[in-house]
Image (tube, rainbow, N blue to C red):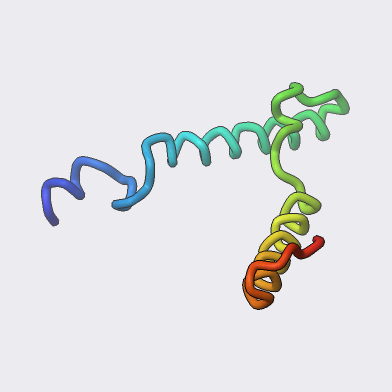
Length: 78
């Protein structure tokens, strides 16, 4: 193993903060679960975790981008 790989767990090409971003998501999701189990409101920032609807909007965006590209860059509604 090259020494450069031994110095970091992050694959080449990933920016600094990559692991921290996932750690924060896991922390926020754990807070949402704990709040639900304890019958309380979660911490406000935990509510910023992406939901299924966010993923659906992302897929619609990609579909519109592909459609726009096929139409020579024409504006495409989502």
